[in-house]
Image (cartoon, rainbow, N blue to C red; front, side, top):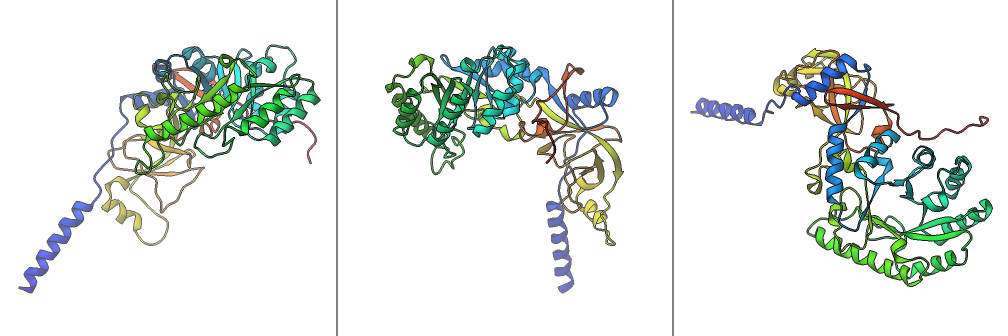
Length: 429
């Protein structure tokens, strides 16, 4: 009887272990990525590149343009699309000429290369950065910051700094005030706080001009539903914005229709209908749809940017450093570890996109030089093939690969330089 019970227990344990064993999740490139792989093998540079699919990008631009509520303008977020050629493509496709900037060198590049754009700062900048912008601004008059640029101000102290800058430069600055509509990342928290700043602006008509408000609502939809629904978060945020706008209009510093009332973002722009207090929404990331933007409100948008990197080494099995056959045992248990690829680069802010079933190896570790990737035998990558990843965000990742590779219909459409993060000249210290 004891032997029979032991056999039953052994069979049960074996059955349970088989049920727990990971299924084979591997598959080759689908048709879309197989075509990209062929293109890059034949014409690529043999290094990691950031691929932008122009057909997908243009379809996303069409979706965006159709989604903007009547009476609202669209402002394109430059940090999410950090390339002049990419921004030109998006501005042309959406019909907008409004851009939001977040970095002084980018602002100068935009003013120089896209002098017809209307620029709004997306964050308050140190006054030293604003001074640098004017110092490096071309004097050809193509871009007029007195008409086309709004500086974002969040405190009376910063407004005082910018006032002094305007006096020193002998120019007039357009001032947009940052308000807190629930995100709690800074900005004015009460409508009455506007009064002192607007009085200060009114006292300097030669140097300051009130241009509007900006309130970012990225918190909407991120509060746990048990605490607050998305609809309730939107209602409260809109009420806060509306109160600020009414307080600002009461000062009569500008005609109401001339004020910029900016807000939203890729996760929330579709929530702002005709009744929203905003008169323009800011959008950028949705057009490339990195992985962090796999949201229900963006379900119809297509991923349009991928990291493509060559396979340097393609090995059968899994070998880990050390005397014990841990790799062989792991691959025997998990069939998704039966191939090992070492790739050009790695450790990006990205998730595997193709082939299906690629895995990092936590025991071997990560590398930004030559990362290991495991997969099942169903993944038929060879040396010089490319695998693909989706960036989790665009603003930092797009700057890491040199020129962007624009593709259309399985062909290279061009190489697009990214915006420079900044270069200074002068003696070393």
